[in-house]
Amino acid sequence: MSLHIALLRGVNAAGGRLITADELTGLLADLGHTQVRMGPKVGDLVFESRERTGAELQTQIETELLARLGLRTDVYVRTAEAWRALVAANPFPDFAAADPGWLMTLFCKDTPDKKAMGALRAAIRGTEQARAESRQIYAIYPDGVGGSRLTTSLVEKTLGTRITGRTWTAVLALAEMLEPA
Image (cartoon, rainbow, N blue to C red; front, top):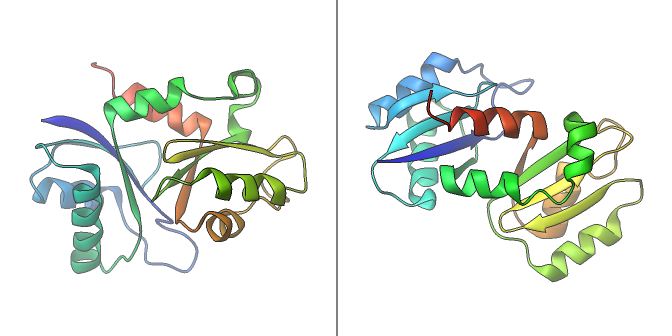
């Protein structure tokens, strides 16, 4: 058994069907996953699974969410080791310590290439900064996320991949859930 984190994109976003924590944890348990726990928000799950790749788990969970709950969404799965590595790889540690709510980790379906990341950095018109590491992009928003032009749609269009984001505070809370009690 290996430990994983699954992030669901846009769960309980405005206008959509509300999904409960019990529905999500129950679905993963029904699929044979164990030690299923909800993270800091609905749509963030920590669970153990038999040896499967992250891609297989993503596909399995996406398929079952649609079939059982009528929820069409992207799922992003990382192993515990990959999660710990992405925490350690944070290129903005000083910013994270000072203002973790304005550091976002953007989880990509596909690894962005260097040319696309260059285009994304060139598209930034404010004080934001973005750096890629594997299938994550670390983005700082010194002036806040709300008025920023570094939006999900800009990132997805520029990189050609789907994303979901979590604040650094949420990333660290999920990292804590990976540690033994």
